[in-house]
Amino acid sequence: MNAQEVIQLEQQHVLGVYARAPFVLERGEGSTLYDTEGRAYLDCVAGIAVNALGYNDPGVLQAMQEAMATGLLHVSNLYHTAPHARLAALLCETSFADKVHFCNSGAEANEGAFKFARRYGRAHGGEEKVEILAFTNAFHGRTMGALAATPRPKYQDPFKPLMPGVRFAEFNDLESARRQMDERVCAIIVEPVQGEGGVHPATPEFLAGLRALADAYDALLIYDEVQCGVGRTGSLWAYQGYCKQGNGAIDEKGCAFEPDILTAAKPLAGGLPIGAILMRQRVAEVMQKGDHGSTFAGGPLVTHVAHHVVSRISQPDFLAAVEAKGKLLRDLIEEINSPHIREVRGKGLMIGVELDIEAAEVIQRGYKEGLILVNAGTNVLRLVPPLVITEAEIHEVVERLTRALQPA
Ligand code: PLP
Image (tube, rainbow, N blue to C red; front, side, top):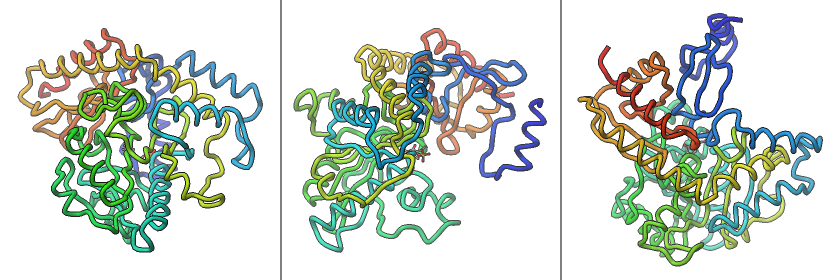
């Protein structure tokens, strides 16, 4: 089948909820994708911040082969397996968490976090303590609960009624959060770096303030690190970057920015579907056997591969390289002489470029230049390349981006 035939067949038979790029991908290597016509693209999307170790990574492939050699692709959560236990232990060792619960996606991780938070609220404050405080420009997923905390009319309106009990405050505005807070709130959910909403890092004062606010009301602080977690911002967990910045640091593991629950997904298993809910003991304690579950979650294949991915990404050298490459990419973009660039922002290899034109135009021109980009809102270009992108590739990305920003 040639590209046109594939696109036609898909359009005939696949639900049309995605606006797909006008080519058909065939293979990938490192940070480069190839289409069926043999064209190469430098990939600054990485499957929407998923393919942290790039394409055709020998370590990921070997981990998959090791897992497949056992014959156990799936066993369900009725049975113990070593990869499941080992991954949970590694996630706890490398974070604030005491316990982990696995699921299959980012949205599902947030659904689980909301359920745990409501269970916690009821246990600590009674029947009324079930409300969630979320923020403007947030994106937490497309399922009914996660969608209710994602305040975009385009995503929400056609599917109302949504899950009740969600209220909103202004992102990065602590006063606004204080005004929305009361005893009925069981959890505050925030992305330490907002992704889909336009690549907006939370200020340290905002996160520390939310931590204090949650404590004052015996509510849980949930970090949605589905996009910004697992090395993307130059620390394994984005909140740890805030600890590192200083204010708030207590010791190596503990810091004043720590959440009670953290949700992760996207890059965790090298491209295989997985989600994880990391939590403190006091959250774990309110959940009883049978309270929550999933057929596929945390199977031996995905968890074995995820263990490999987290082991590699959590190495200090790897994380330092992400930070350095993120700085290089950002500095080079800031040097681009284009009247269309309004602002460059982000953390590590999660960069947003706000434009005075629609990002979609530049994305289309990027394809012609051999560059894959994605938007975050109408006017923001988002760059979330594989974390293994090289310095030479970063220079090439910026050259291609410079050309894509020139008017046709
Ligand atoms: N939370 C954040 C911060 C995200 O960026 C996303 C997806 O982009 C989600 C949740 C939803 O994840 P998924 O698409 O795996 O359901």
